[in-house]
Every structure is written in C-alpha cells, then in structure tokens.
Image (cartoon, rainbow, N blue to C red; front, side, top):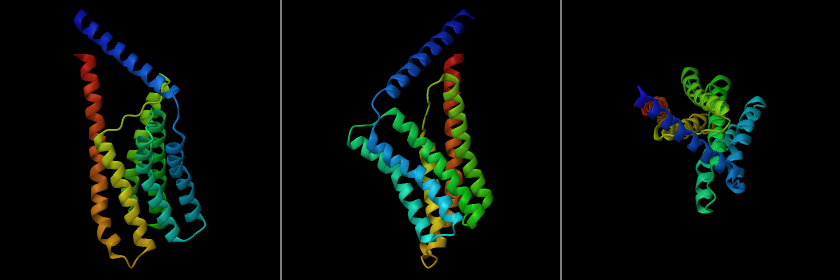
Length: 213
C-alpha cells in the first residue's frame, strides 16, 4: 500500500513537472507567420457559413475549403522551416482544425446535402468531443493541453479529404474523380475517427496504468 502511494505521488510529481514545462513553452515567443497561416482556417470557417448563407458560388466554396485544408499542413511546415515551432502554435492549430472541420461538415451536410447527415454528425461529434475534453482538462489545470496521436492525425487528414471530395462533387459535377472518391473517403473518414478515438483511449489507459502501478 505504501509502495503504491509512493508511485502515485511520483507520477503526480512528474505530471506537475510536465505541466510546468508546458507553461514555460507557452510563456515563450509566439511564431507570428505560422499563426497567421493557422488563422486561415478560422476565417475559412466564417467564409463557409457566409458563402452557404448567401448562396454564393460553389466554386468559391471549393477553393475556400481546399486552401483551408492546405493551411493545416503549411503552418507546421513554415514553422519548422523558420525554426519557430511552439506549443501555443500547436494549440492554435488544433483548435483551428476542430472548429473548421466541424463547422464545414455540418454546413455541407445540413445546408447543401453534400455529405450524409449521419456521417457528418458522427465526424463532427468526434472532433467537437476531443475539443471539449481537452478544453475541460486545460481549464482544470489552467494550462492549455493538446496531445495529438497518430490516429488523430489520420482522422484530421481523412476529414479534410472528405470535405474536398464532397464539395468537389457539387462545384465540379463534370469531374468524375470527386464522385468516385466520395464513398471511399466517407468510409475512410469514419474508420479514421474510430482509430483516433481508440488511440486516445489507449493513451488514457497508459496514463492510468502509470498512476496505479
């Protein structure tokens, strides 16, 4: 019993050190250029709503989604090239992804019928659930917490590809590639979301096992 208590305290001490390390990273310099690229997705989410609400060009909607998807990988690439990677940038990138993907999924499904509403609800629910849970953890310890697993990266990539193929079917109906890719991408996106969820459950189990060992 005493040994278990000591191990538990050791785990909590290490966790506290990790939190302090994150706090120091957050207090450090903020990379402006990668952050501006990440902001493309915040602006893109608003643009998606505006384009659909105003019944504007579907071609414009396609390019807004495509550019927003590219920005997800461009901000990290630029940050690495400039050697300006930072934890605040990682937090912003995560939030931008979750909000843009969730808003666009629901908008395409319920306003344009470009995506099956059940599929869109499941995928948006996955992304919003992770955002809510990590926000709750961050609030409880007063430090922004973002942990991105391999499964989560796959889920984000698959969601973006689904958005592009779905809106591509509407904007460019003559392009058969979008029609042929839509169903496979729907399946892949759902499986990727499941993989992402399982990866976080495995991570949680490892953390609990360290605490209880």
